[in-house]
Image (cartoon, rainbow, N blue to C red):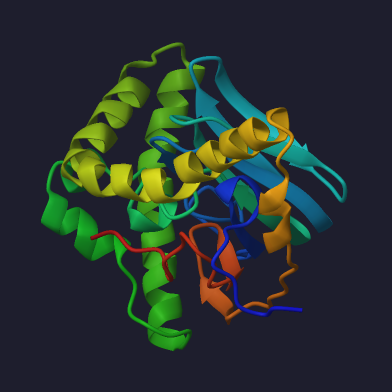
Length: 249
């Protein structure tokens, strides 16, 4: 069995495991850093414990319970916040592997940080490693994201989607210059995977399964344990299309 792979996971998805943060936030809730993705759908597959995911979207505020066996997913533009209810553990499946790590995820920081790319990057980027300095920075980052999130949620619950829409626009402006690099990641990852399937279908249609001669199997294991992710302590895999760790620049 091959242990290192040149092929991405099925569908060129990203994969990680999260243990949700148990840090209490300003509203008394324990959990992660609210954020959205610009072009990627994210899914949670709950493997242990209890909790919830709070979401903000055009259909309002939702609090979705999470328990073992639950699956929840959210499309681009949906603000989401993982909430710890007791030993919550989640396997995360991420569309377009490589794009979230390249900045597709934007935190719900207060507007003044979102308006300044340098200040945003300084608040979003963590020191390397998994030591106390990194933990303290991750907690500060989470608290800033919750500060902005609570303002968005309060307005949305009151029927005013203006601040939520403003945040979406600010997030789009913040990442605009990265789109060419993202497009290359997409072409090399998700798009190439879909095109490979099309080529295989063409081969089968002509009765030529020669491509099956390259069949093989792969195995891997986490390459970093307990990293500080957006929502919790994160076990990561160095797989094609991904860059570790998440970064804001």
